[in-house]
Length: 631
Image 1 (tube, helix red, strand yellow):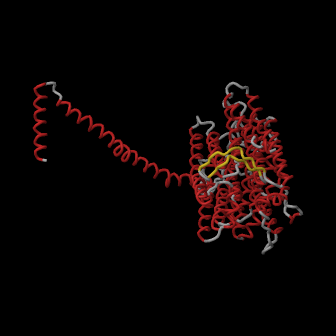
Image 2 (image 1 turned 60 degrees about the horizontal axis):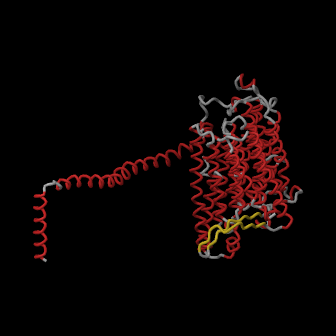
Image 3 (image 1 turned 180 degrees about the vertical axis):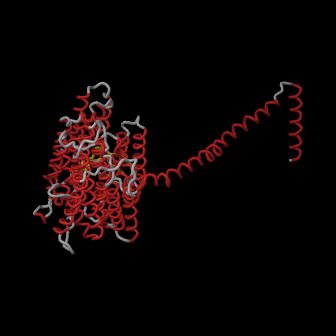
């Protein structure tokens, strides 16, 4: 297997090259087949790698070549597949293949079909580099690569100015976080003279002293800044909802299943550093919880079906960071897995709905679709139950594990987390009820064309729905008679998972509270949107103050615009008009003008009169003689 490990990322790269070069020549069916098959074969190789790690219990290391060598500092281009990256490989290639298959039907009529598949393949290539790299530099290549692909895919329909702006916003905000990650790498190189995980991590537990503690705090805070940008946490979260400008498969692949979880993967990979930086982990827990609550509050009132899912993604990512902050690394990574299943399902289901209603995304103009789109409805229902944390679906197990560890860390944070879970259940069932129940509120033309999506779109929905139902079996807690397979699987890397001690409330009681909260929210959503047939008001109508604040996303974009963009624009204009034009350009142009004007004066001395030249020569000789006599 070691000899073929490099094929896992190479296959998507080959798909990118073939489809990119042949995008205008190859038929669409062939482009879709190539783009999907390379991911499917990569998935098969990932399964083989996973089984090898499982059978031997040892990671797979493949050193392809020495990339950088300066003195005794070496950066190999090497891959590492261990318990953590093996799971990520399965998620990236497995869910990635389903999204590629879905895209064949969803993007079939798009003029940029070939270009779209080449971009998807390139994204998968960079995401695989990110998780397979055996050092921070290879990880950073993948990190930057997925940022580039995110820009290309969000702005895929770039002729729409708003979509192009959304792509630029995502690119710029990610670069802010990436700078923190890059500085952290520089510091690691300075103190450890290496970027290899195998060189750095074993040395960390032996470090002692206050200075070392401060150093690790600085490094981990910078790494967290990088994760904040990539995984859309406060304050660098506003790019993710705008990223819904891209085609729906992009939302599912990049902003639900893979790219946005890169920050969680990076922190989990570097947990040895974070374990010795309690200040940083406390900040991570606080920021994660704040992000979960804030995004959930915004999702409560959104009317765009993709925006609801976008803010839901931000909120669920906040849960994952909360888990990291309280030391529940296994629970956080477990939620990465289950979230990949149900959120990819929900985004693809939303795409199926949008496809059926001729591109409409406003839930106020939907309704009554469950009869026309039965497969989409039942699969989205399963995804909604899963994300709401209702047993026995997958989201219940992963979210409960995070909340149980949060209760041990801080009961106050736990109860805030439960309230957020209640919000999640409400806005997700609100989305489901507004979309699929009641009377159809769209146009007659849309109603006439309502239909279920083709098999290439519904098959991935069914597979993801099954995974959303059974995915929780990966780590059923002992309190429910399970064996916590994932915790044992990750034990060689993460150590033994922290046990949930019964302090105040038992684990079963904590489960009951979170499930009860989710069910209460479900019942309220049913009462409001099914029994009372309540429909969100039109944009032209007035809303209560809190509802209006939520609907307008608490004006965070406007706040950033006022305190960051506009002052930067003023500063830029100052540098342009004063420093650049008047200062630099004035100096350069002044030297040029001075030279020209001086030349104009000096050229008058060249009269062409021989007598004048002799006269000047005599004057010069006399001046030289006087100078000589004087000195």
